[in-house]
Amino acid sequence: MEKISEPIIKDRYRRLLLLIKDQWRRLFLAMICMLVMAGARSAVPFLIKPVVDDIFINKDIGMLKLIPMAVITIYLVLGFAMYYQEYLMSYVGQNIIRRLRNRLYDRIQDLPISFFQREKTGVLMSRVTNDVNIIKNMVSSAVTGSLKDFFTVVGLIFVIFYRDWKMALISLAVLPIAFFPIVVLGRKVRKVTTHTQEAMGDLTSTLYETFAGNKIVKAFGMEGYEKERFFKKTRKLFKFELRTVRFKALSSPLMEFLGGLGVAMVIWYGGYKVISGTSTAGTFFSFMAALIMLYAPLKKLSKLNNIIQQGLAGADRVFDILESESDIQEIPNPVEFKRGPHHVVFRNVYFKYDDVMVLKNINLGVRAGEVLAFVGMSGGGKTSLVNLIPRFYDVSKGVILIDDIDIQDASISSLRDQIAIVTQEPILFNDTVRNNIAYGNRNASDKDVENAARAAYTYEFIQNFPDGFDTNIGELGGRLSGGEKQRICIARALLKDAPILILDEATSSLDTESETLVQKALENLMKGRATFVIAHRFSTVAYADSIAVIVDGRIVEEGKHEELIARKGEYFKLYQMQFDYSSSKEASEEFTVRKHAGKSFSI
Image (cartoon, rainbow, N blue to C red; front, top):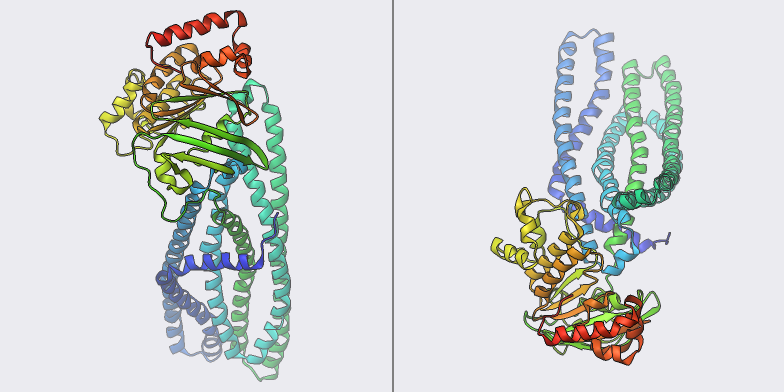
C-alpha cells in the first residue's frame, strides 16, 4: 500500500472537519446539551457528601426531603439533555455522511473509462457503502462520544479537586502512563483496519462477479471452485478482523488495571485521612463516587480512539477516490458543438495505453450520411479507435476533428451529446422500458418514445408486456431476450438523435431471426448520420462507403468491399476465413447486384 504523506493526511482531516463545521448551529446546541449532561452527572457524586454526612450521620430531616427532589430534578434534566444531544449529533453525522457519499459517487461518475478498467466494481461499491459507513460510525458515535465524555471528565475532575486536591493528584497520576499504550494501539488498529477494508472490497468484488456471472459458473460446473475462492477471502478477512479485535481488546484491560491502581491509592490515602479525623466519611465517599464515575468515560475514550482510527482509515480510502484526477481534462472556455450534420476526421492519430502503442498513424474521414466500417482480428485496435471519438480516452499524438474543430478544444458534454453508441453487449438498467429508451433524452414525450420504439422494431413485443412501456425489465434487462435488449438500445440511440453514430459489434451475438430485426432497426438508425461500424461479419459491412482494415493498430487497407476483394490483400484473407473462396466471387457479384438495385445499406 502506498504511503500517504503527512501534509496530505492533514489536508484530508481538515476537509472532514470542514464538513463538520458546516453544521455548527446544531453542533453548538448539541454541545450545550453535553455540558448540561456533564453538569448533571457531576452533581450526582457531589450530593453524596450531604447524603452521608447530613442525613445518615447528622440525621437532618430537612436534607432528607430536599436531596431526593434534587436527585429527581437532576435526572429529569439529564434525560432531556441526552435525548436532544443524541438527535442533534445523529442528524449532523448522518448529514455529513450523506454529503460525503454524494461527493464520492459524483467523483466516481466523472472519472474516465480507464479508471473503471483499473478498479474492481465490487471495490468501488465497498468504498461507497462500507468505507463511508465506517466514517459514519466515527462521526456519529466517536466524535459525539468524545465530546460528551470529555465534558463529563472535566466536570468530575472539578468535583474531585473540589473535595480533596491532594487525593485528586494521586488518583490522576496514572493517566499519563495510560496515554502511551492507547496511542500505540490506536495506530495499530488503524493500520489493520485499512487491510480489513481492502479485504472487504475484494470480497464484495467477488460477490458481484459470481452473482452477475452465475449462469457461467453453473454452466462450467465451477460452483466448488467459486465457493473455495470465496472461503479463502473470508478467511483472510477473518484474520484481519481478529487482529483488529485483539488490538482493540487490549485497551480496556490496560485502563481497568491502571484505574484499579488509582482507586487502591485513594482508598489507602483517603481511608487514612478519615481514620485520623482530618476528613469525613461523606467527603471520602463523594470523592470515590466521582473517581469511579471518572474512570468510566476515560475507558470509553480509549475505545472511541479505536473507532476514530478505523474511521480515519476509511476516510483515507474515500479520499483516495475523491482526490483522483481524470486524465480527460477540459480546457477553459471550450467550444460548444451544436446539433447538426458533422464530418469527422482522424489526422495522424496515435494512441498509447499502458505504455503499449495501440494505434499508429490513423488517417480517416467520415461525412454525414456516410458509413465507415472497421474490420480486423480481435485486439487490433478497432474499439480503441472509436473510443477516442467521445473522448473515453485521449489521443497520444495527432488530432481528431469534428467540423475542423479539435475535439479536445470542445466541451466534453457537448461532444458526447453529438454521439450515440450501440455496443455488442446491450447495457440496460433496472427500470421501465420507457425510462431505458428515454435514457439520455429525459425530456422526450411518450409519443417520441413510442416512435423510437416503432423505428427500432420494439413496439410489438413491448405491447405484449403486462404494463407495456411501464414494465420493469430487471437488472441489466434480464427479463428480455438478447435481440429485444439490443433493439431497446437502438431505440435509445434513435431517441437521442445524435448526428454521429458508433456501432460496436451491434449484431455479432444475435441469432438469425433477431439479427434480421436488428438490422432493419439499424438501417433506420444510420440514415443521415456519420456512422462508424465495427463488425466481424463481412456480410454486415459490404455496403459501407468505406472499409478500413486494421492490423496491429495500423490501417493496412482502405476501400470499398469490391475493391478490397479484387486486391486479394489482408481484407481478402480475412474474408476467406469466413466464406469459402469458391463462393467469394458469387457472393461479391450478389453484393454488387443488390447495391445497384438501390437497396439500402444494412448491418
